[in-house]
Length: 296
Image 1: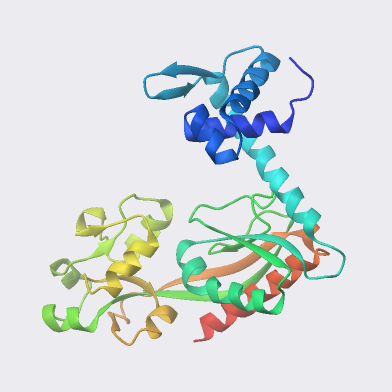
Image 2: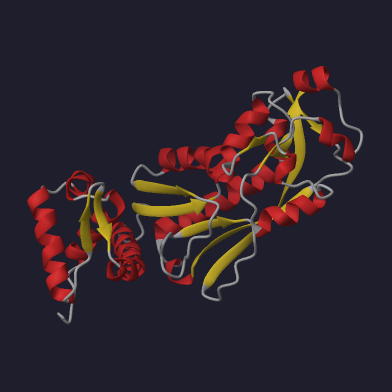
């Protein structure tokens, strides 16, 4: 096996894994199909084993390919971080900064922060990765993270923002039609909006709701944005950030004295980025924007 595997071969390998065909990877990567085929063949030769087998539905990854995937994705994240760092020039606020945040925070709160950052610093390129899964800052999957749990990795700079409170909300017209629950038990008589897949985070929230489970929800989605859209559409009762609900006069909080779920909010980045001007500027803007959001 070759002592060093060229990154372009691994990059193409990931493209084929994700797209399931040479033609799909070629389109995604901006390469020709023969080039993609040559890259895969060269990587297989370097490794001394096949990475894909043909099937009627496309290319199937072998066990060797699946074992290689995680390592290749780590290299991909490192290469992206290197590229972002290389675009930062001295003390100018110029370069690429990648931020990861949950769906709701990213779409409903950070969009405004990003707009203001671009107005103030046209040289900034901002990437926003929305996911409720924690991305690893130490592996540089992102430069900055907004998290709803305290960062535990020692090499991170972290700033606590405060607590973002979740409450139960519904549109006023829904409550006018179906009544306002006076107790958590009375929620069972309503159309409830909630999760589809149980996670430790969800399990903790369910305890606060008096043991309401997945089966209690008439409308289920693992997308927080979809749940919020359903609440805003008047489909039923669901959880929503109190600060977001205050922006929408049509939303009304219910059972405020019986259900409140505070989410500790942090902004974190790798300590190696402390002297990186674009990252520092974005970090401070996120802290300021989230602090103002909580104070609404």
